Length: 160
Image (cartoon, rainbow, N blue to C red; front, top):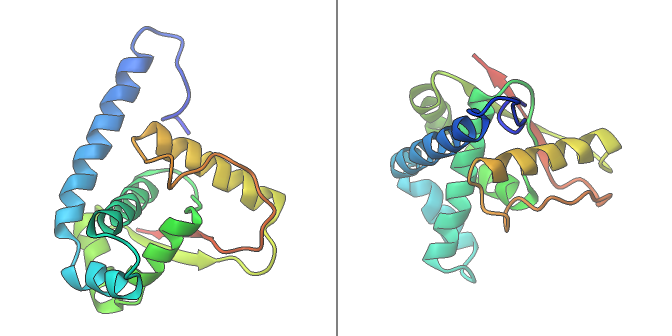
């Protein structure tokens, strides 16, 4: 997790700020390239959400997918981001080419967990939340808490 680790030299905070800005620019670009059907279906399934709230959820999903595609190791989405990602994955004919074209040729696979979350999965959720917040993720969607709730999230696996 080189992104979150502070370095001993004077450039550490500058590098982290640059990475945060770079990820933010990529998220904005990827959000514009997200197929309209994906957010339209999600909005239809969640009439209680405003357009702004739907867009914010998709923004965090796109941030997660970009970071997952460029990060070493597996990451665990928050429950809200996982739900939005599920919606996108259902559009298989759109999802696979979108990953290939816009995530540097990396296919981010959804790997659901089954049953209660283990301590390892909870730790992965915590590490992912810290990483996402350090890269500009909204704390509302990336709570830094450990819980032993039934599994509602998953991990991602990359296929290059």
